[in-house]
Every structure is written in C-alpha cells, then in structure tokens.
Image (cartoon, rainbow, N blue to C red; front, side, top):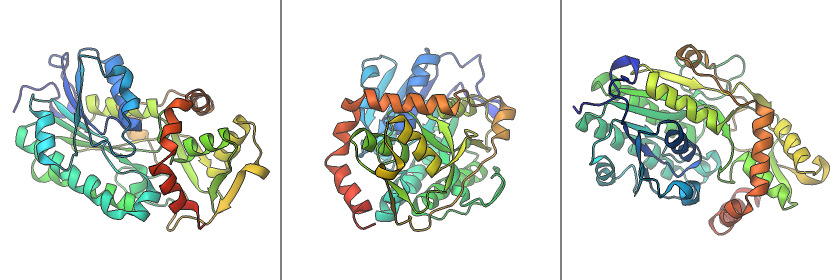
Length: 353
C-alpha cells in the first residue's frame, strides 16, 4: 500500500496530509464541480484528478475557470471502464471520491439501463481499483432517496433501504457493494447520503433550475400532482463541505447522512420561486400527472455527521435567493443546455402529462 495521507479510522493523518492526491469522479457535474472548487480553494496543497464521462450533465463550463490550474487535471472517461480508471490513478492517489452517477429519477424511468451501468457497474470498477491498488480511502456519494418514502420521523444510517425508483434502486445497489467490499475485502470505504441539493450550476432538469429558467422565459412550470411532496433542501456548498468532512474525519465502513434541515413541499418551493421571478401561481403553474412511484416525503437525521463536527452553514432563504439570482445573471451558462438533447427529454417527459 502507498504511504498515503488518509489513514485508519480517524481520517487524515495530518503528518501526511499536506500534499494529498485525490481522484474525483463526476467532477464536471453539479455537486462534483462544487467539491473540486472547494478543494482548490481550501486545500491548496492538494492535487485533483477529475474523471468524467461528459454525459449530458457533465458540463465543462462548470470548471472552465480552473482548467488552467496546475493542481487540477482532467481525464475524459467512464468509471465503468477499468482502463479509464487505471489511467486516472496511474500516478497514485490517496483517495477516491465518487460523484459519478446517473441522478435524475425521471430519466431513470425513461431509461433504467443507463443507471445500472454507472451507479452499479461503475461503483464496482472503482472499488476494484481501490482494492487492487491499496488506495487509502474511498467515499461513495449517495442519496437520501435510498431510504424510500418516509411517512414520519427521520431516516438514520442503520435503517433498511427501500428504494422505489430505478434511480434510487441503482444507488442503493452501489451502496450495498461499498459495504460488502468494506466487510469482505477490508476496502477503506465510507458513504455519504445527501438530501435534495440546490445551488448554482445545476443542470436544468431538476426542480429549482428548471422552474427558475422557465420563469425567466415567462414559461409555465410543471408541478407533479398536488405538489405536496416534501423534500429537505441542502445547498451545494454545504453538501460539498459535508463530503470533505467525512473524507477527512469519517470512520471507515460508516455511513453519514448529510441533510440541510430545510423541509419544504414542492408547492412551497414553487411559490418562493414564482415570487422571486415576479410571476404568479395562477398563470405560471401547470399541474401535471404525478410521477410513477413518486415518494411523498424524504427526511434524514444528520446527527451522526453533526457529532463528527459538520453542520450546514447557509440559511435556506439566503441560499435560495442567491441561487435564483445566479440563474438570472448567468443565462449564457444555462441557455445552451436547454436546447437539443434537453428539448427532446422535456418533450418526452411532459408532452403527454
């Protein structure tokens, strides 16, 4: 095993932690690119390799301004491709943080197979690399959706997994592989499960960027069913900080929920966005047929992460207002995304609902 900086159950050994080499997978995506920016800003001695397949949501514009940084290196490749993974780790890495995933529930209903390849086979390929190369730490970035619908209370890390969509089932499958490799092979792996994440640079298929960009263009927003589904909202920067905290301080073999503590119905979020964009619920909301198997409520307890020393910093009202403003001021970022492939997806998703 390499003389790595991530050691044992207590996270980074500071004696070795001054010059870490980190492989981030899916770093051109929404949360992954936020994490890369965080590392470049707050861990200046670390170097980052970003392995990304550049699917529709892997946007080079998300990290265009850091592409020339000598601490950052990009590799175009798929995590399910063992050769691409070996190329990304050829110089030796101390840790892998896996953001690479197919993530949108609606797309998983339209095309489940793509989710199996990335979220299950891809995770397997990464775990094999960790095992074979003796990489000192692996963090699997997962989701609260693996717990399924939560009628009351909050999900904790020891709860059974009850995924109800192809997306959440594929993520649960990846999580179970991680735990199996930790137990069977001693792979030094950890899992984080984040709640609904929002912020700048999120692909406009998700609720907040879709609604804001539609409203900017004076277009209606599609609300599923009665809109009373409840989600807990977490800012991308707080999510990235939570993952970094688990990377540095988490205990091997453990799972950590990373929640925002901001439960809201989809209608409440819609009303806030409508108000922020100067539109009205009467003219700009279209209720559409609900999604098949749509979970009514997610809720997670982040007490374990809090006991580790992490807590969200960004008040929800402030974070949401800043997010709306970012999309209003960065049309050059999102307009190219809402053409071509996106238009085809949007038509398939909403035309008959």
